[in-house]
Structure formats: structure tokens, C-alpha cells
Length: 341
Ligand SMILES: [Zn+2]
Image (cartoon, rainbow, N blue to C red; front, side, top):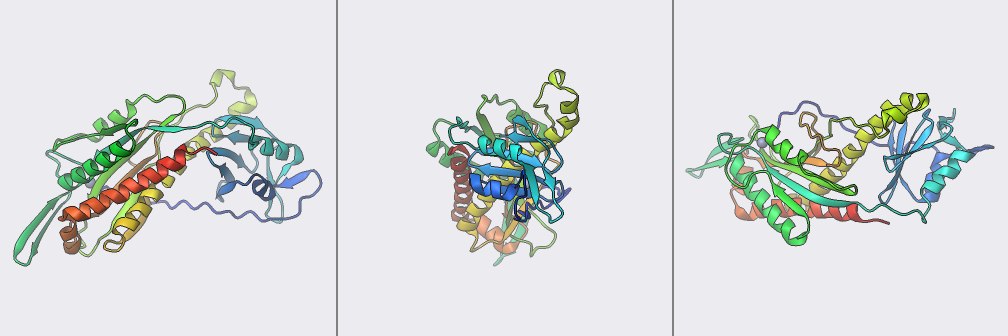
């Protein structure tokens, strides 16, 4: 079980209206259609991330640059919002937008080199405990044992599919690990330029309400800041945009964590959705991971305090189904992440 601090539902809405481009300006919506991209739109910041394959271009109303692949800045005249609600860019900016998506550009290919599976709790910390009396028999479940079994099943499947990847469990037996020890393990992994890693924590849930049941997946936004431009090389204008760049970079990995969380949730829906409720995606902000290239999620496999779910969680076949759902979600995410167009 995790302590919810903040639940924030991010909605990216493509709200841009199509309207006729006037002289020397181009509607961003038509540009996105031209390059065949998909838009993630943040209506609060008026910021868009256009994705096609692994290529992305970020823009923001009032901000004078495009950011390619969260790393490369192209100066432009700032996009502006017209009275009819549409967002337009200068024709010159439109040309650079299209060139950023040009097919003849070498496409960076990224690789998930490391997967860290973190069974929650352990040792002196049993996690949540469910105790039930069912047909006169006592059933007692401890979170630390359930999540270790499932983690081991997921790891076994992953190792078979990805013999070349570094697959790590934070604990392989019933031992206590502090939160800092778990994240330190992740932060110690060295990644190459084009490499990324996945961090997944597995837990079981509990509630005073014995009727509460079902699975859910939390995505863990990284709480870190990094400079993509060397501060010494920044001119005055770049210094003013540096905080915006940094906030976009934080978003990059949140987006990846959300994509990963969705794949896991879909995988679990397919494998146990008929017997256990889907409680959806949640955002967790207390869990600090510092590594930039690390989409991170936390899976809650079900409630040990619910009598029906406890009986399911007591069956190996159900644990196997949960692990398959998680595994399938991971594989779908990895295949998509490593696919270049
Ligand atoms: Zn837990």
C-alpha cells in the first residue's frame, strides 16, 4: 500500500481549432496533419508535444522556440493564439517545423537497457496484512510475500524474452530494504547516451473498507531538474527560457511514465479484468527517483483486505495471471519505445 499525497489527473486535450491560415502564418493543426504527428496538448500551459514515432517537437504559445526530442532548441518567432482560438506560427517557423520531421534526418534509436523490478516491503516490514475467516478456515496474506512471488514471475518471463537486458530485482528474498536503498540501486545504474531504464515497484493494497477491491497503476513523475544547456554558454535570452526548458524536460519523463502505466493497466485488464476491478491510473508524487531516463510506475495488484480478492490472491493461478498482465504491459511499452520509424 502507498500513501496517496496528491492525485492529479493530467488531461492532454487536442483543443486546437482548425481555421484558415492567413498571409504569412500557418495554423499549427494543419502542420501537425502534414507531418502525420499526434498532439499531446496541455491547455493550462498552452503547450503542445507533437509525436511521430520517437521524434517529438514541443512548442508553446508565446515561447520563441521549438524543442526537438526534448534536447535540441530551434529559435522561431513565438507561436501565438488568434482570437478564434487557433494557434498559428510564422511561415518561417512552419518551414522549420516540417524540416524537424523530415524523413531524411537520422532517427535516434533508443534502447531500454535495464529493467528494475521492486517487490515492496520485506523482512521486518510485512506491508499490508489481510486476515479472513473463510468457511471456518483462517486465511492470512502478507503483502511482502505476494509481491515477491509476482515480481519473481515477471522477472523470469522478462529474462526469457530479453536475455540481453539487465534485469534487476531490488530484493530476491524476505529482507528489509529502506526506500532510499531501493532508489539508490536504480540511481546507481549507468546508462549510455541512447539508453533508458524502467523502474517498477509492485505492491498490494489494503483498506478499512473491506469492500474495496481491484488493481491500479501509479505513475511516478521524476522530481528532478537538469539543465540541457550549459549555463555558461547561455546568452541573455536563453537564460530567460531556461526555466521553461527545464519544465518541459520534466514533462518528458512524466509522459513516458504515463505511457508505461497505461500499458501495464491494459495488460492487467486483459489478464484479470474479469475477476478484479480496474481502478485506473493514479499519480504519485512522494516517491523520488532522480535518474532522468527512467519511466517509473507502481502497481497495486489488489486488496488483501477484501475477502473475495484475498481468496484470489491466495491462488497461484491468479498470481500467474497478474504477473502475465504486468509482463505483457512491459513488453508492449518496450517494443513501442524501441521502435523507430
Ligand atoms: Zn505496499
